[in-house]
Image (cartoon, rainbow over all chains, first blue to last red; front, top):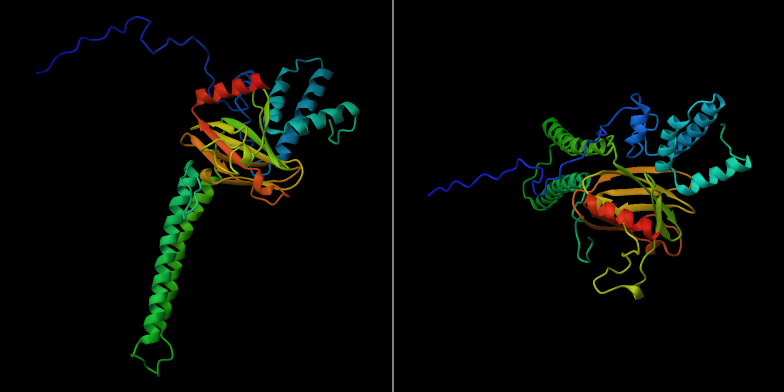
Length: 117
Length: 230
């Protein structure tokens, strides 16, 4: 004997475990060439960098550190907004060991940093 | 995890390790067949009453026992290369963790968002709770979310170490001044143990690695809790 079950009323907002999501702009994976602000806002972790495809990521870390400081220097010399440089900072913070970063920061302060900025 | 009468690998906790397991079974079966065949041929040749003193060569048999081994080697090489290239794929990680080796403990850094850094020391045998594993437990485990591709960057502060977790199919040398990248995805929740795999001094055997894989929500809660405790 088949019994027709009454249909649940799901017209209201309260659907039990289903919460209505607030409207946000989703972070789809974007390429570097796209919107910089979008990339920085949607940052998850350092993406694959084709310049450093191999196991040794030492140079990846150092290059992003250099690029951040060079970017800061270049943009602030021209009195421009330095927020695009935040990308490099996010990447080097993700990749570089904290001890390396603090050592390089100390070297920068004391003027003994070996890289060219 | 490892146990005393273990003969094979630990159960795989990542897709790559699963592939390696299956490949190992495949290759082991082939070499087992070859070993049995060769042993049989040796025994039979030793005790056979059939012999001919006038045979000098045979092109046919030489061709057969060149072609067949070549085909066997191809059967081994193709799956092996497939896994090699699979391991090399660009995997778009969701999270980067740094594992830094010291004498004689590991430091884990999670610095994608708010920097979290903690040391992971082995729990001494005298401090173990009932049910814990001797020489394998640590005070702070490296917690990862399941199902997310991870990037682990391995380095060292003093001497050579090596970060290895057999259940995940991962081993990467920790070299001072160098940052070595390895990647994996943990496919099931659980606790996975490993040990330092490069001789690094007196307590080389006493700096284990423990990876605890949990659902993302639990990982986020753990992260928040660790930041508050720091």
